[in-house]
Length: 111
Image (tube, rainbow, N blue to C red; front, side, top):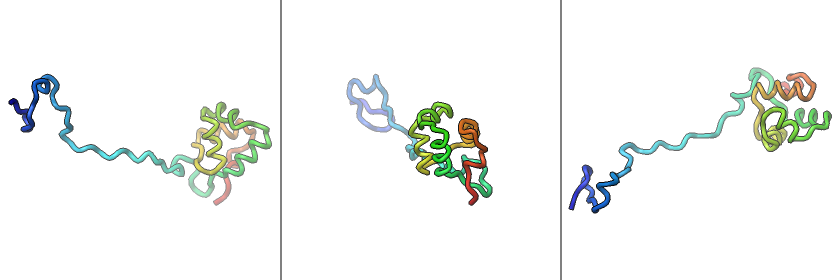
């Protein structure tokens, strides 16, 4: 019987395919939850208003899909913005304001 360097027995085929055991412990998976507040500007005294986005979209008669395609996001992402589940990034805010023909400040509310 043959033995591997770590003392485990090898059958007649294992020497052809060395053990793929990790010698270092696995790292925990990364935390994919991102603090959306850090991605949104301005961060001083204004906060994104989901209600105002929905109001401006309805006022202009645009669909979620139309806004999503114009900003480079999906319809569901725009829905999440309007539901307050997430917030658009600064570059997306600029694109939204241009598309909705409003000022960026009109999509924020004073905190």
